[in-house]
Length: 83
Image (cartoon, rainbow, N blue to C red; front, side, top):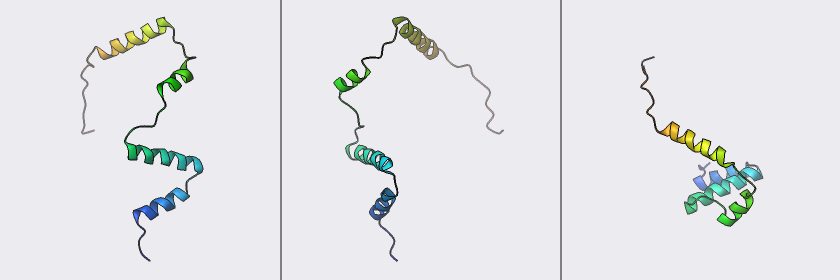
């Protein structure tokens, strides 16, 4: 019996997937074909997330934590790759 081509193997594998998995696979294939990630238009995103509100004090706290975490150099630690 002849060995299946890559295309035939793909088709056979896709037939074994659930409809949800097939949809995910299609998204991946479209991404590979277009090399642009799937997304949604900005106005749709803004409408969908318009209910989200973060208090200014919380934003300031997050910004300070990021600055604090990014401004330093981690202390050198002893690493022994032989263990």
